[in-house]
Length: 112
Length: 117
Image 1 (tube, rainbow over the protein chains, first blue to last red):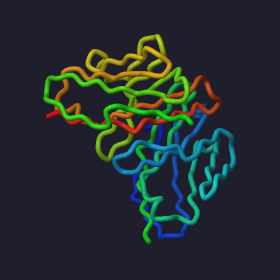
Image 2 (image 1 turned 30 degrees about the horizontal axis):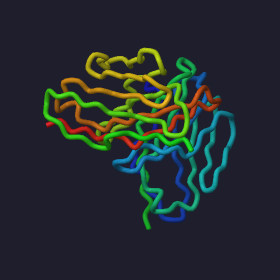
Image 3 (image 1 turned 90 degrees about the vertical axis):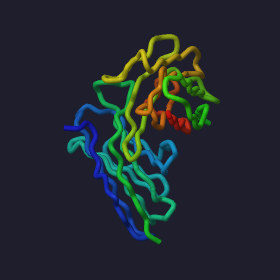
């Protein structure tokens, strides 16, 4: 089992819709969870981090964490074409505080 | 704040030569820096973790004699790809972390695209 898994996509949503991105992880003791956005040819940029169960909202973005289910998601409301990118889930495992493990990423395409 | 720069942004070299990539934290002191490699349409793969003043910790399968990492100061880490070959062509990205923050957030540099002919 891979440490961090995501659906590779591509996920296509119409402009203005809600995009839902999912991520599961294998280390039950993982501490912190991150969502990064990566445009083609660019390095990742941090969108949100979450470390407590529940929801965390920041503008159009909401991260949801369920440690019992080992599941973290990212919701993007009112999706815009500029949101089209690859979204990387990253997890800070208990086994190694220093580093984060990245998932394979989900490609999102927002159709105008 | 929390800006990380990389230099060069791209480099083309001949097979067998060595290439040095610099990673700098511009407005904070980075106790830990990370080096990643990303092949087309793949995710980031951690190559090594470096702490200022100590030897880097390499991930399994990464040759430490080929990918030399130096973290001589709290704002600078370098990655040297020695005797580069075409299969080393990739997007190399560094990240930096300030101290031991609660959320363990990493700030990424813009990346260096290496092409080995």
